[in-house]
Amino acid sequence: MSASPHPSRRDFARQTLLGAGALLAAPSLLLGCRTAPRAGATASRATGWDLVPEILGRIVPPTFPQRDFDVRTYGAVGDGRTDCTQAFARAIEACRAAGGGRVTVPPGRWLTGPIRLRSRVNLHVMKDATVAFSQDPRAYLPTVLTRWEGMEMMGYSPLIYALDERDVAVTGEGVLDGQADTTHWWPWKGGKEDGWRDGMPTQKPARDRLMAMVEGGTPVAQRVFAEGSYLRPQFIQPYRCTNVLIEGVTIHNSPMWEIHPVLCTNVTVRGVRIETHGPNNDGCDPESCRDVLIEDCYFDTGDDCIAIKSGRNADGRRLAVPTENVVIRNCRMKDGHGGVTIGSEISGGVRNVFTEKCQMDSPNLDRALRFKNNAMRGGVLEHVYMRDVTVGTVADSVLSVDLYYEEGEKGPFRPVVRDVELLRVTSRKSKHGLYMRAYASSEISDVRVIDCRFDGVEKGNVTDGVRGLVLRNVQVNGQAVGA
Image (tube, rainbow, N blue to C red):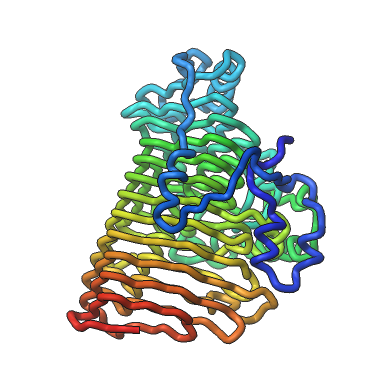
């Protein structure tokens, strides 16, 4: 197992946690992430938006040898009925063994179980091709190392998965269909709107058991949640990978989160179209990742369009790897809970998030930029910037920083949100322009709102407990407002 390319978790964790020395001193548990300083790394003197050219200079999509491996050559049949799982695996192994290239999926409907990517392999789904994933949960066993709601465990394989690989990609103009619906996967959430009915099993007992294991320090290898656990898999999850590209594909009907890179470095998500409205159907959730570009994507989701994460509670503090250096640009957020969300599984912290030139417009889209944190999570969320974003209708607020999320102040870990800037952000209709609430032992500070216009605001701004709030050339319903 190679060391993670992330910087020392202790350096960052010292800044983010209160009273967690014992946790920080503990070694990573089996199958956890090992970290080391990046070779040759030097501290940049750039700040704010001036950091973006440096970040983009490091984000270079992987390239692949010009060799194609057609899945039909390895026994796949695109009739929508034949199980192509082993044919996909054979094609991927042949591609890897040859030194890399593209595994091509031609037009047709290709039924498969989970796909395991290997280094130097680009899974290329052609136009008019649909990769349809099995609805049988047993197809996603044996268990693999995964992160579920910010907690490491051994669980169902994600539909497309890679572990400790370099140079992996999913590209093309085709469709990835998770085939989740109100009779498969979604009822496990436990909501009647998702197909659950009285007497049916739900994820709650396993989720509660996993949370207890995490808080109790159970080694990851012993956190086994297989058949009968009802913890839904993510769609695409590269885990501890370097040089990742997801480009062009359309994603439908995921069991849970859509694109979920974990502990990865150099990630590009470009031109992806996501249309799925199941429970917890987040669009793109980079978690404990460094150097991430999300651009030219379309999000029509059942949960947050983009949700930036870094681990939940004790597991986030154990690994203590922040998500950092994320650039989001030229995306359209049509529907979802939040356009860009920081949290809620955010105990490892986040820094340097830049969003620009995006469009958000839906009465079902709750918030444009949202921070979700509390005293059970803790962590420092800092250096988050949004500019030149056009918001039509959002149901709640343009900027939301709510440290009372779920458990609120019931916990020993201090949530901090600082250095947040909105520049040239406009909206046409919302309940609030700004909605920010801190409690006495938390921190929301250095929030700047500049050259912004919020129209159709029903209830004005809420800024409880915010320190260092700057409102410069801000209009709400045509009236100038100040701090």
